[in-house]
Image (cartoon, rainbow, N blue to C red; front, side, top):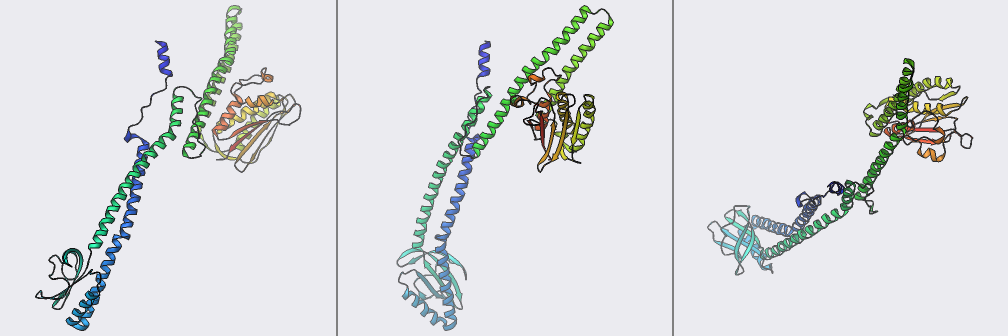
Length: 471
């Protein structure tokens, strides 16, 4: 049963594929269809306006011009001139498209090619579509009525051929819209499939990570598009998570290794004093040694807590404008006394002011750790030098000592928690000082660089450079 439970925990979670309406790919596809359809509708509207609409506008303009000319002819020459003008136009109409009808108030026909006045024609100045008997057949016509003194004039055009053309155009538009919708649907399906294919590597990587295998990474296509940028961001996040997991395992191992000895030593001293102490003074001394050992263990845990807070960004709420030069002078004033007690010199070269934004307490702790390490590893009569300068994009702080320095291999690991070089095993400490400095630098978006203080010298000493952005 336990094996079955372990297998159940190790199995990757099953992710049900989203329903069609819940699928982001389907929603993107619908958006594509909507945009494509709107664009096609706009294109069809423009096409209609440029063809059928142009024909209508041309017909209306021709009828209006013709009617205006006939009205002017009536004003100049009266009814005989108007009748003569209508007959001239009918004689010149080879295509038999023009429609004229002139009647008097009694309804008697005076001129034109219509026998009767249509019933569905409006009042004076009205435009109408009507069906008329024209050239021996029923035809669609657009007519315009103008009332003259004692007369009624009807001017129009036979639109039978234009109606057929409009029907053909409408049919073509309908088929085009149908084809547009089909292509839009096919395009939407292809887009949905393409989105699913591009997202599949990220989904499979996430499933592998959820199953506990942190080695999975999102494969990149090399196109540099949004999906590649998303994959690169996920990979960077996974690298960070994996490093944190490795760091946690390393911290756990280091805590178990480095704290086992002082705890065992404190326990052994207490047991020895309990068995061998001859009096109250012996017991008191043993208890004091045990308390000192426990205090050292407490300091280790406090350092770990500060590192964890810095790495988690929990202290960013305490960021405020500060003068780093003032912080450096306070630290130098405190550690100068310690250096003098070891017959060392602490030299400083600091500007008047170094404005920046950060956590004053953590920065002071980081500088204190660097000065403490420098004093610890500098021999008697040696010198420690602290300098700072303002750069265009930040502040650079450097602390140099004249101690034995670190090899290239040790410098690569010096910022790890609990790391201690072989030469420093006999020195007091927990190996957390530089780790806290690195955590504080990362919290402020800065970096820590370790180099030789005097390259080629013996001993070379150690130079710790801390770069911090000013904002």
